[in-house]
Image (cartoon, rainbow, N blue to C red; front, side):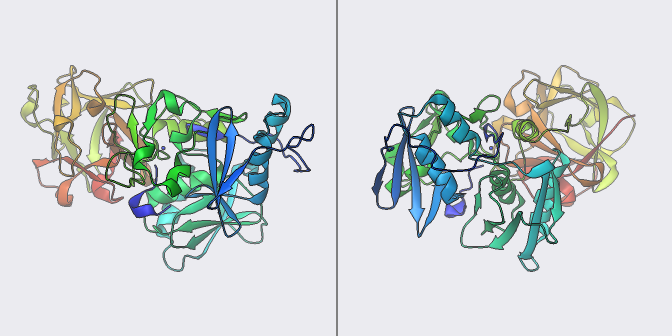
Length: 433
């Protein structure tokens, strides 16, 4: 979805599970009672368990949000589900049929409409395949497939809808946005649309244009399953100022504060990864093994390691790149918490942890060691790249990655965080010794 930089990046937490194939035959009308539907300015309004759901219709195409396209069958299923007279059993059957998963976790695709601009879409599919049972296969003659196309916005169908389903890309050179849209095609909804939305965030309609209100639906229906705790770092989570009409936040935490999202980085959160593995089974992703000590080498030069200069132990000592000296100040004990985030502590000072300086969020913010308190600035998402390398992203600012500035491998180069770039200066190898 384009909307001025707004891809509303974080899974899972909301998954629409499809368990059975349902033939849509006159479902939804029971006892002769039609669902109450209001239509004005091409907006359809439904009521699900007391929650208003808006669906936009534009030239015969239905949108659950700006970047989620519904087929007519899916629209009619939602319409039927809003019938207050329907039994809960019938409603659950309908919702289980709303979103279909890809058969045997194989997703066929075509990139022919992207011309020469295929690299980022291929990279996005590779990122997902590394952490899930999904296999992406270039289409030959298969009937059901994702057709990647250049467009004026970013959007996708939700789940496998049958036939050629367009995945529309304005940002066709941005892997993180493409991952977001592929997640929709896999059956994943926006994080802020979870059934527990109101228990985790405040939506501010006073800051949202009327024609964008449908992007903030709280879906509260049978068959819609939250996965894990609400995940602000999810690649499916809207940013706090998404669609703002006045520069004020449209989504805040319950205390009124804003938050950092992964937009537009290709950084799937631990919950994103766990959720996609819940939806598509047959693979157990464990990630980087924890409770092990590593030397962390730059992909630019494997002899250069993350290093605490001079074996200092004082809070605020900044982290450098330095030639491997087989010393404990360049060796890190790596642990993992229940949320799937890692803590990195230097072996010569195990009470300390790698930390983002000053809770900074700007490009160029340095890294230091500081007494470990479990703060989000000391928690890192570590996800696999090609050839055994990993990307290290701070939980406190999930759109940034640990970075070797300017790809400078000289000894004593200070490491920092920087927006996702996908190059070797943001890739690291974790070597045991």
